[in-house]
Image (tube, rainbow, N blue to C red; front, side):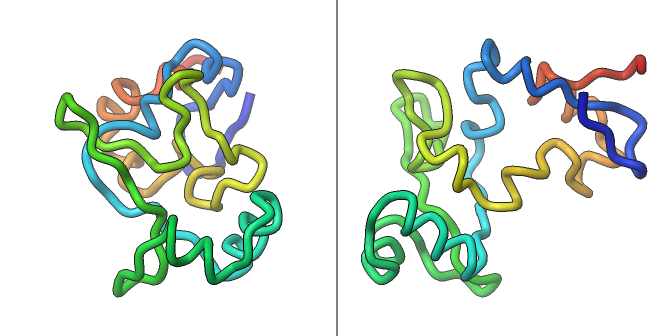
Length: 125
């Protein structure tokens, strides 16, 4: 069970096994990745950094973001979300933004959205 001092819920990472990747699917958004995370991901994927940037990232005003793919149902998925296995293909190299989910500021006051998106939320600790 993972907790965060500012949030009144906990996260059970074992729920990820049955979730289907709700945090990796849905509305389009930005998946910000830092320079050190880019270097680490490139190393894990055995790619030159410039190739990773060109093929898998987009440059935004906030920095680099991981590309998304548009699905037939109108939703979007992180390009590293394995749609068959329903899990992250670069889990060990995922960016901090992904590592800190569901403890994001946007969920601090919107718990109902958090519960909908993440079955690993535990409110009774």
